[in-house]
Length: 234
Picture 1 (tube, rainbow, N blue to C red):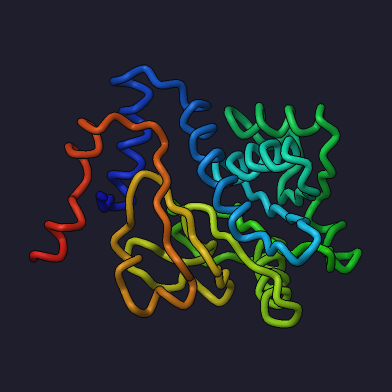
Picture 2: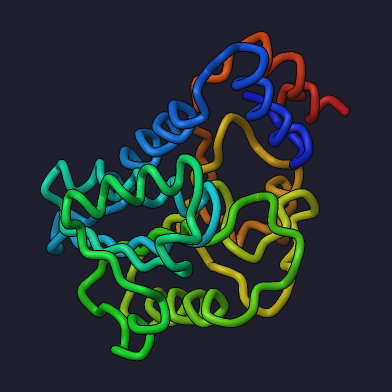
């Protein structure tokens, strides 16, 4: 197991593509496969399995779109709520959005979703709003979606899965960036832990933390990461 600073996490993604020739969409696909396994594990056997995926801009939203495809293929009811217009997505996120559109998976815009009162049937909410690169407080529609998520968890027992990190948490320092922060039951982070995840203060937002691989070569993990064993020896 390795730990990566936010800067080195970005470098890991970049070098996977530029040095080793791994297509970035393969990295996203590997992340989605790992997410799907954890989503399935979080679905209660006693309840109708219905999943709500909140997809923000960039690759975090793309991970959510790819996850929706995998769950849909397993006949798990999935609903996606996106914070951007379809035309605002680009790259791998846009490709995965296009795929789930063609699959006719239900996709709603955030404003319409919130105006309608949300979705009380979802037993699992996936937070794919913002990833580890967020550096500012969350406001606007995304903040409203975070409040909705936390209320659903508290009031009706919906479980929450954080993608890479809970949105609104600075996982470099392990501190909230503002007033809107997701409280996750489980966080699936990619390639390795982030420094702030070791802070006690962050645990109430993170829940259980699990690492899933993205297909990065072990040589690159060793070059950029710090082993967990070495961290605790310091």
